[in-house]
Length: 608
Image 1 (cartoon, one colour):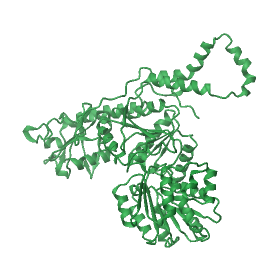
Image 2 (cartoon, rainbow, N blue to C red):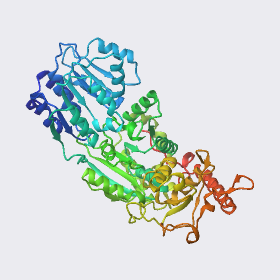
Image 3 (cartoon, rainbow, N blue to C red):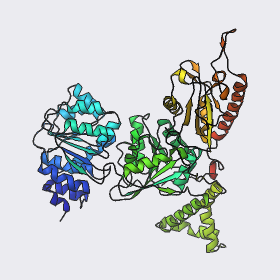
Image 4 (cartoon, rainbow, N blue to C red):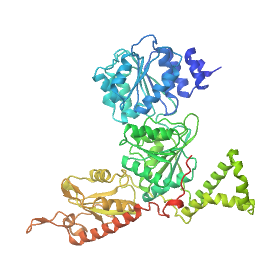
């Protein structure tokens, strides 16, 4: 007996379940479906992405609506176009034996006129993204004043994307006596606010613990110097030859840059971010679903709503600013009963973020070592051997065997095997031979400073309290301009007209190059490497301090009316910047510290 029969579902829905091959309901389905079938109630369900939530609300809605009516009775709001289309297809599949069922997807990037025509012909269920739905309501192209069921799917993600006002506006056009079902992976304050405002004494179902990560995902972190982050990513990819992953970056710029470097280095990679057109996004997602792309580099916003099966790894190239977002990232893998791995590449200044995330997901991270070159060569060699061992023979090759056998008739079996495997092995060996150890040592950090870091560089910058900055606002200014994480700038010390700050030495070049001839509000902002080591951060200006207002670049020459800076530091800084710029040009053609991949020397990923 199919266990779905025990939940109270009707035969036409059970028949669709049988066609889909579902036999045992997931935990969220087992708990939610009977409640929604038996009661007209509001409900809040907290469960991770990929646990079967669509079926948990989809089957009860299909059983409770009146198929013979053309009135819109169900509204499902979802955060992204991809998820909207996926839910629409799932609901249609679940209701394939319900004659007369119409489900309409309403989302941006498609003709609003065509969508309005579908609704006008009569649709019982609308699946929509908040922005397009609000637009349709304002144009009076859709009427949701008689709906009986409203679903907020991935509610926390919709609110993270800034849809709070859209959702509240949409729900204000719905009847008060409807049933509202809210599904979310986490329960931040904004979701609680929605629940209190639009729901009446909802039933609460929690799968696991609130905000807790799923048991099917293991969590690992790799500690490296900031400058080695990309090299670490490549080694993790090479150490997992069958990887099928989503790689998360904080910004669109970093997402595109990392994807381009991976493609350049021979990996099957693609980028997914907000600057892509809808057509470009569709092409990338199609390639990813078909596994033509093995490594999808994405921003958090662009990745929301991705529901692709069999993702083996989630790699956090950069940690999110908000620890709760990590729950969504890691939920992309380990779905449908499979296991997955969530990897985090962290620098020393980010270590305390790991502890924050552990508290939220109620799981411990395992500290792992970035594999060395020879370990990767061994993994790649055995992967190739297993692939060859499991390959089915194509007998079309038989007609060429005599010629091939003649070529190797003087080679022993052992020599032949060595030659065959050396073709692939040598490429990885030449690249990784004598490669450096990327693993960094941990250090103890303080909450405000981001830690004392022996591998950090201290800078002087010619803005301070007189320019309206304190240590927090200056830190935010530097983070935003340099596109860094909030822990990548530390030991910020603000004086009247100048300040100091630290970053890891690995990004010194980036800092100095960015502030070459940089203006803010028409004024040059000057940054140089400082001799001050930050040991006495409360030291004042004047005779007790090394720096005074003459170093701030703000002294005016009253006789000429021209602003000038201390010539010693200007010339020294220009010299250092020229050196750094030249170094940058050199490194652009050789991203890795190992020999550059070019031509046949690059160990290109096999195109599967």
